Length: 224
Picture 1 (cartoon, rainbow, N blue to C red):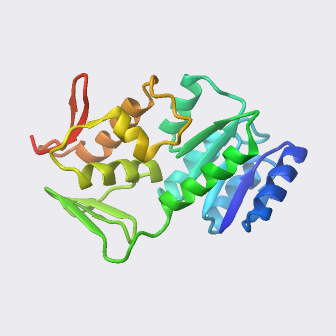
Picture 2 (cartoon, rainbow, N blue to C red):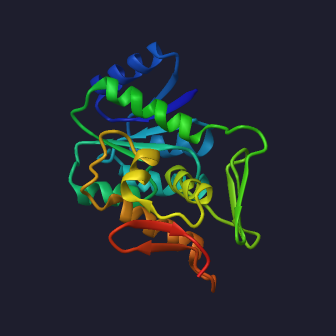
């Protein structure tokens, strides 16, 4: 597995690189946003670890550029900006996970592993369908009425969960168990916001809406 680490603190980047390489991962380091974006757009990576406050170009700008070209590569934001607003902005720009500095390295390794498993190839031939939505978990593609949907890794996982349980109301707790790490704050509205992002991509422009809110309970996939 090949990871791109975009971090301007040389001591921290060296520490992360050494630690991940001890986990048998290959790490390429970029010290500023401009170089990080260049590498991300020209070389294949299995995961991007991205600081937000960077020289020359912010991490959110780099993330936006990545998402224009690749909706599926997992991106972990690693930053000192730790408010709920900061996290929602990161998720809204296409991040798959968010870890606040200072952090425990064991937690970083766990999150990297979770993102790689979540973004990796699923068993061959796994196809999920509901109404006019078709998901192929082998090729990591989703279409609605034949139109491709560009989803982030986390959006893909959320839609997969809904597709595996059509007609069943999924609580926020159930969604958190399947799509977020154990440190996720269940009291925040991150899941609600993320479902909103997914709904815009799945339902916008289509007369039949598929993702619905059940007030006080959670979310359900059904034709309505």
